[in-house]
Image (cartoon, rainbow, N blue to C red; front, side):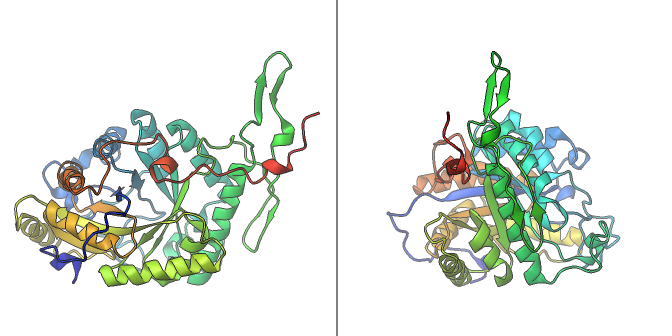
Length: 406
């Protein structure tokens, strides 16, 4: 059944052998609904302040969420495929996602911080050092969300190509982008920094490596200018609104964000991505697949639907994002997440429809409900994002090439 019509739990029985769910939150402006900024408590005058974002992430961390995802883009938000829609009744503008994550990192302790980057128009060398810096600042809690853009009006900001790439080539380019970034993260071995004042040696040059990447889309020499991140490899995520991006997730990601409308679609998407992962020879490499949901959450039955209707009236049209939309109580959502897990999803990225209302509803009502059902952690069990996701710290691909010490 459509998620927006979900009212009671009727899914398959949960498996006691399954691991607890992973849970993350997507943060963008005042929330997913275009009228969210007009709600009480939305604080529209503070949307571009560090205090606003620090408060949101602190709330997410209090709810023990795995990570906060900072959304981003390279053009003003618009509902028109041709460019800016000229509407003045909606939030327009964003802060840079990775820079915002770096600003709030010292104010948090355990939650992961994942910034979105449009790889189509951003050089991998710049991305590698920005996310490596975020990992150092956060002491191992950084993640990179890669996204592509074939929008002509974004293309015109840069003027690097006469026309946007076809969709399949955009994803191929993004996969190469991630490969370059990962190699740059490995271009410094973990012990490359000697810092020996007596000998005057700060680095061991033999432990810095040229990556010498030559591909269709990039030619990058390396090494990076930033030492290897604390996680070795920060977590990489990618989103698939349809099957066109499944290959990118299968080849390049640690987390795939799948946009599906119901449990059967989720099961089909999981099967397809896992199949592509195996075909690429990566079946043994861990991959989390998260479902995406925009949520309207209220404790009282019917209250969320009433609130959604009021917001739709303010916006002048019904809300219907490209991801599934849930409207109901925390108990109903907990049951739905349990059902979706049976389709092969290991976690969920929740987008609060109104951050001022629905983020606290997630952390203070949904999380306790999931804990009562044995589906979610009661304390953070690791200090890094890879640790929270159960991902090991990868070995450096270039370390074996280092000559033995004299």
